[in-house]
Length: 380
Image 1: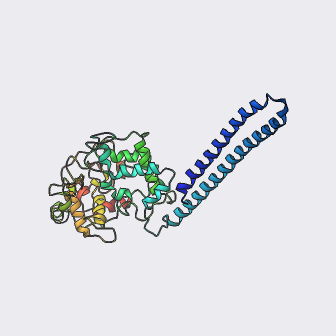
Image 2 (image 1 turned 90 degrees about the vertical axis):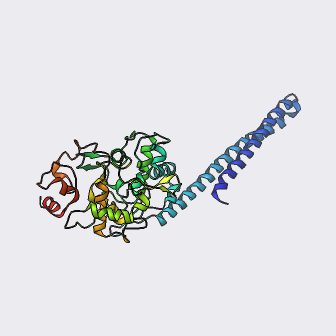
Image 3 (image 1 turned 180 degrees about the vertical axis):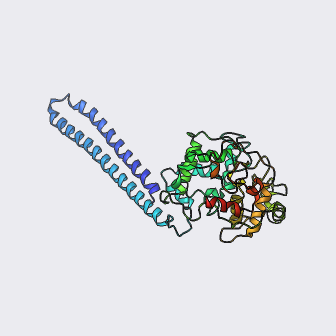
């Protein structure tokens, strides 16, 4: 019999037996009271008292045996679950592309409910923080976390969360401080989602953190498995061209994101939507994807629909150019321009806002060519 039915049946049978014994014992109490009025029946009273003690002993023994049996069944069930999980859980190897564990495995985790909630918050952030959000309405722009972190942060080279648990907390040059996972999540809420940060003690924050940590189960501390983050697209010998990128966008991107870049519903009359790529509902200038190398790597391995890191649909030039076109369009301003990169010597070569420790112009830091800039910092 499936364990789903074993435990209720065992406890129901136990409850019935115990109830019956208790009722029998109560009846014996009444019968004993009658017998005490007759001196000739004292022997029967002694026998009944012995029988009552035996019944209580039987009840105690039955309870102990039942608890031990159920405990053994639970222990065996947990052993089988652990064994099954271990047999299908991804095995870490520095040489292999790390694949996220099957989401069905989360159902057997001790924090299954929190993991499921965290995944849904990532995949459908609009449902919780969008215009009609269940948690905090109108708190973010028109994106979901999944808009930038594909398949709820589980796709190889899809800006995933594979190394979050293994590498945080970590010192980050952008803030110049030691950052925790909640701090990094709130960075995304304030930059990519151009919205309000979460309460670090809230159930929503705990759920997202728990889900991210679950995705990285089995990744050794300080390791970054292959497939983490984004691909690196080779640098061009020329600046990335927004004009050429417009042609790529019209031919390969507008069918999902719209000619105006504001996204389209999925399906045409559906409630879900392809994300807006610029404008007030898209990421602001402080987001990671506003760096051209990040956006080029993102689209190269994942766009248009159906592309993967090992089967791209764009050339390197197309990836750089369409990224330049998208990031040349209007979007919310940088909210942390005065505080980011306190040590300007640690700015990435494609950080599009000065000042810099080099003599290259701001436009070159935004569109390239990046090879001379990258070489300058590599020598230092």
